[in-house]
Image (cartoon, rainbow, N blue to C red; front, side, top):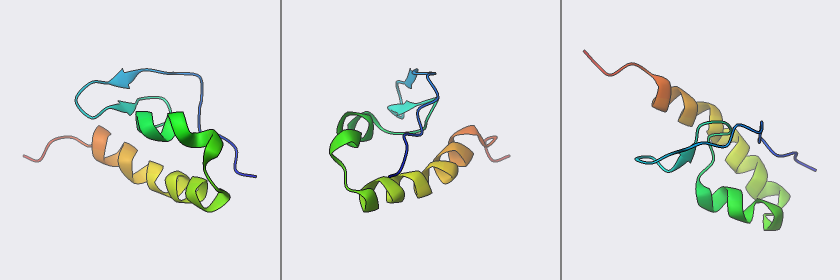
Length: 60
């Protein structure tokens, strides 16, 4: 079973609507318990890219 990416730092960034702790959307957080293993794995695979895009410095 895929564990949750939640790290107990639940802060939603208003513009992106992403949690700054786990990088999931509000919809993903709300539906996590009902997702299939494959759906959870897909979300988990997308999280590093989300974090990198969000925290990357703006282009010069």
